[in-house]
Length: 141
Length: 418
Image (cartoon, rainbow over all chains, first blue to last red; front, top):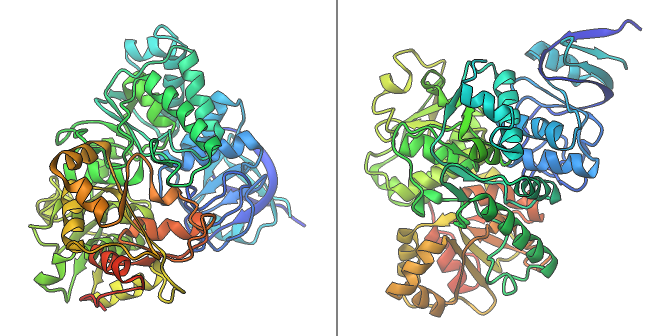
């Protein structure tokens, strides 16, 4: 099968591969994600009950509380963080987690942004490699 | 990104390792967001004391160990529990011990132990146009939209970096050009009297957040005499249903006295009409329409103002909370002191109201404490409660909350949008 490659804009550096967890809806981390397990517990999320641990987490943008960074840093501490964030639009609140964990825990969580068409392709993706530096997401399954 | 000599010396560690870490994270943020320079901020609201695991505490303690000190006035956001009445609230001692560590770390860095999510009701109020770094979604929304100061939507952890350095990247909502509204929301079919009940501000805030998502909206049609408590509720609820850091209420928001000002002279990209029916639909998503019973009523999310506590006392009219019920009211420490002096604290206590400070009702594991049905007058609480506790609460006005608590069964008055 030919590999599908999606262009993306690298925001936070890094290259990782993993299973894709795709949410069509915006996501709130505080209250919406269990910081001990990485399980999405926002009842309005279309991925309610799914774990983001070790996944390429794809969602359009963050919503809700500004505590997202606290949850992402805690997920990094307990080893349940997503491998990468893929968004339509990112923001300061979401970037806090990856930026602080790089400085404090020396852990990388690349963040990239894609366009609407890229999101649609990712909605069907099983596994992907995110290369923030090259600005590419490659679907591997 | 252009860095001043001061920025470079911060990055170089000349002001200590803690300030270097803070500056390193902030300049990374600036680079990733394409900021042209760093700017000074004059205040910080610190939301990193919110316990969601040990990571944030370890980070704060690390900064203390490195000798870190905040260089601007810093207020502290609410934590999970009342630090004096945590046992009455039924919190575990282990969690209390962690909170004492959190308190020590943040006050050692120089934060005031204000412990409130509404610092603007506790003496921490910037001026119009002032550049600040506030975290906590309701607080950032309020300070941008109601006061007209300028903050990006800071997250817990970045607030610490801003406090240690007094600097932030000039990007996002710090820049006037990024504060332009894109979506116009027009109210239609509402009457002047509909705005007398603060509850409508929660509903309008909820709908606003749903419509705009992470864009900036402008709402036209709110009365110019809207009270500050209603505007607080709009801020809190719109920040929970959407990714809202700034909204324009035409005629109320300082920088949006006219549509022209809100849209910077340009045309809205999108116009949405909101009718009472839209509020009804949204309330169905926000509120539990068929609870089994109610045995907990909680108000004060965000923390109650002095005026709201007065309304609460008026609503009780000397009656008391039913024996099958708990009634929890959350406020800040300053207001509690005022109420102790003027007799309101004792009067509310005699009605059976338990008044808590410091903590946030959202953080209470009500399900573990065997509460099965909750009513709240907070759109923000209603949005988050289910994912925190597995209980979908009933939304009610402050008066509904009091009537329910007195009767011991759910009481909801018809609203203008029903």
